[in-house]
Image (tube, rainbow, N blue to C red):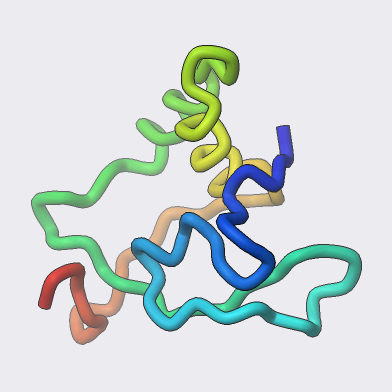
Length: 94
């Protein structure tokens, strides 16, 4: 699917909601790239990677274009691995 639907503007993506201090990364060749500070979800809000993959597989882009674009933003660009966030990483709404 690989879409540009996650772009809000040339300087900001919809990912900025969860990734603080998002800035364009001019070192990415041939496209829009961004760097940001990640935020750790609270333990009771973490979503399993397999669940998100299933959501992408079942996503209907005609019915929910924004949701499908967000899921594609996670999985549509290469390998995704599950890992634990560092315990000292800032969380949402600290």
